[in-house]
Amino acid sequence: MGLTIAAGNQRRRQIRRVKEIGWTSEKRQRFLDTLAVTCNVHIACAEAGMSKAGVYQLRRRDPEFAGLWRDALLMGYDRLEERLLRAAGAGVNDVEFGGGDAPETPFDAELALTLLRAHRPTVEGRRKRRVGEIQRMSRAEAEAALSKRLDALEKRLKAEQGR
Image (tube, rainbow, N blue to C red; front, top):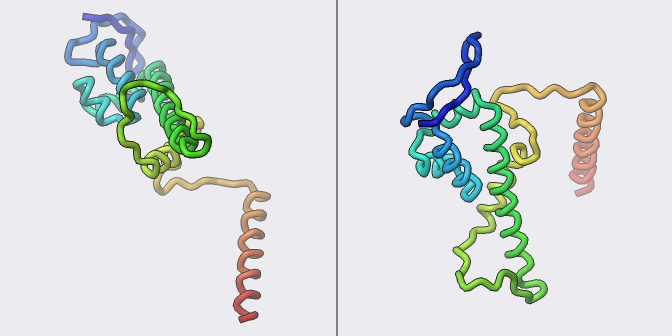
């Protein structure tokens, strides 16, 4: 049984034993390794034998684990980008990369691009905006956005009048 340093609800830090049913260091490492390979929390939790709710709770309360989680995702997305680039460049130069005996698994480039777009805020270290959350902008930004929309509207109206 492993040890961990824990604190909670205005209690001082103390060394505790990690219960075998909890997030042991082996389960954490298995989760992070699988997450780095798959970029899929559900699969990583299944591999570690833990629940999704439990892993999200662990990420909220343990900043070190949250950082390792982010590093694993970055590693996974680097692998995904590398695979996309290899697929995109394969027909350009007629150069073969890898040279391994194992054939590559089928690859869906559209799905890969969708995943990269969906998780760009995570990869770039930005926070995703929650549903219903208002994003404030400065007055200058608001005026620039409004001016841009008005210019586009004026252009469209002129085009319609010209028909």
